Length: 242
Image 1 (cartoon, rainbow, N blue to C red):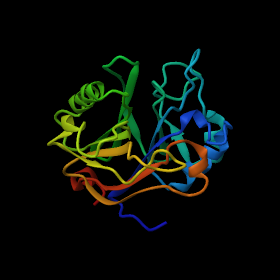
Image 2 (cartoon, rainbow, N blue to C red):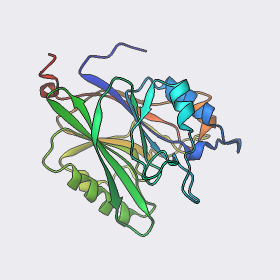
Image 3 (cartoon, one colour):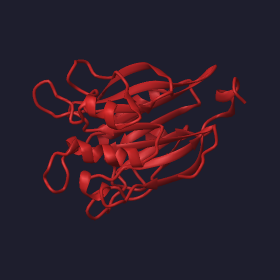
């Protein structure tokens, strides 16, 4: 992997489909191999928990601890789920994160998002992980809610499955304060035709690189491919170390 500037972190988003691959097998170990290969610092996961009962985690915590260099942010409400409405966050060990909030998103379906802050010395960067709804009018309201949680900040990032098929419509609530990265077509993994997975960032955050993981394991592990972006964070966030 290429060396990244100290001011650049790699953010990724991956809808893991409850760890069920295109072969019909539920294989958490396969998902973890894909995650390790992303070389990311922060990963937002969608569909990280099963839907029924107490929504047990699709990725066992003990496997994450044993097989990766990530820690799970405490976004779940109970002891068996990995996240909130299936939204979980993995942060590379050594990166400090806090200020965690669970966000209810409006709409007909039960949806949610998670908010947290990456600690960068005297400053922090606000990050949200989300899985938006199936109907555009609901998605617009959900994006309005996320934008409201970033109000007053010029250093915010939104990661997730935006569920938006259009390349021109549906993301209007994010303008003009956010730019949206669509690194490439990420769905369906077997034959990608849509860029459903995206990353939005405040306009003073730069983009060094971005892409879609298209290795053979990623094409089998879920029906979505993971996306990533190397984001150049505001210099003032690193005032203590520059």
